[in-house]
Image (tube, rainbow, N blue to C red):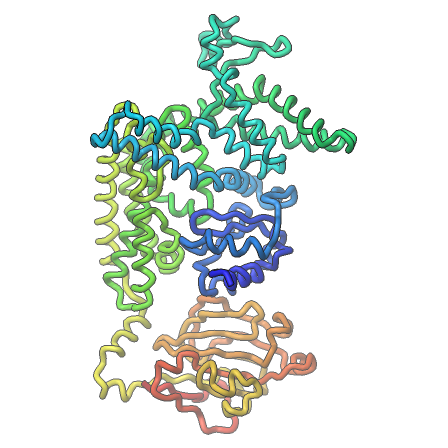
Length: 637
């Protein structure tokens, strides 16, 4: 069995089965599903599954957050769901216009971001090694490493042609061919301008001034260097996808295999070179100039906003709306300083988790915080966000505040990144100016970290406090044996009915104490109330079972009926939600005793202490019948 095969099977089952999966990709920490029907996914079950951090819904995607080993889980999911398209016409139409835009952008850029980070990091390290004197920038080593790291950026239209084709349901290799045509040397600005004087110049005297060296069918071909561009190829592939659909409909099957792609290529590239490419290039330049103009209004405010909201945008997947601007800036003007104020967010989040790890008395939190800190240093913060800070709210807000303050400094100091970099500490080489080899931006970046980290540490130490139950548990662990002997935790009956000794419960898992000690109740009234003050840690989607933890740490499972999970929630009504705090006697759920029995199921209600091992003994009531809110049992420590 593969390492994550069992987890993969459970995930596929809980998202509604393989037939409910329209497409699947993954990023650094998340499986990103497009589901045909999201209502079939069991959110609560997935969130509480070992190996899953949390579940998010954004941009038309159903995102299952796994952590650093997401690629391994993804590889084990693929054989289960089989071959599926990366995007379908139906899935593209789901959600709002904005959701569909985010979905398209993420689908195009996700597959290539890892490669871009790798190539960018290699390029940055190559520059760094030459700056520190390991070798010169004219040596064979430098030229070789620069060439293999720059290849992806030089031929970026080819890579994006492939990913965009998969997203727009164009034949992927046709998308590659469109990208290759855009990068073909004879059609590039450098080759054309070297051919002599231009035939004439269009839009002379304006920002759109363009020399013309060739014409196609008498129509001028505006000279544009498409290498390293982003937007033109995406729009051309989108146009080509409609050309392909049209030609596939009208061309006879006997010649469709080669005639359809030939006509698609000719039509889309003719329109692409004559119209789409120039307009998209002009648009790219205007976007770059526009965002710089907006930023110039107040760099500090702009930086503070980017720094503060960046992690929130990432949570909802909305950062995909900014990433194309970031890449476009680097490719058109040679650097980005608009999105860079986000840089300290990773280190602010990591510092918050480090402070929590040092301050907390919760052993479980300490265990999960340490690997989250290590991941954060290298730029992976999802385990920290979803597993630690976001559920506790205050630490997450602190990380946003620290990042926002550092972002304001980055805006003021005009932090720049010149190539697509790595993440975390691996992003520093991307801040070396490739023309001057200056390292001023690295200094600015480090100063920003030195601002964010202390703020995050200090605010977390001041404002973060362990929950009440953690403090009380810690106090119990530090108590003397004589103090422990008199401590007990009491649960009161959640139902009215007849008491059933544990060994007489009809289900073996409950009767033999495999899940813990407790008892059963045969209810005479179909209502369950809270047995103590506490928090609902589990509310099963089928409503037949609840998991509740008292303020003192007593963990209780209340399971209404035997095998009633098969009713799929029928005859049950829930009045609470998972994570909700409840008080003793509060109504939790109701159920129809007669209807359940008529369906062929027992209504015996096992009530089990699932953390029995934490107590010396469980002392249960000796009464034969019991009313709700009456003494049920005590857990002795």
